[in-house]
Length: 118
Image (cartoon, rainbow, N blue to C red; front, top):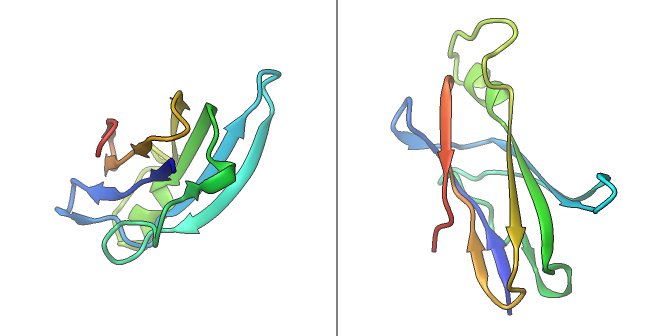
């Protein structure tokens, strides 16, 4: 059975991204977005369990949004107004509904990266 997981690493402070709001959307061909889940990362920068699995895990286009600026402000990081990175979007596709897709985020106030993990 396929599933989607994620986690966040704060590369600016060398720690897990704890307390980051994450939203997952399914994207339709007409451009609309369906909110599937809204969660917050735990003290290890992870979501407790898959963010998507079972019958909801289907082939298609998806969007993860991470509330980066809110996270850094809560840590006391001085950010300009507006912040350089506010909401970090990661748009990706699921081609195999039976596979494990892991989409991590490495974040700092001025840059981010992602990859398909395991």
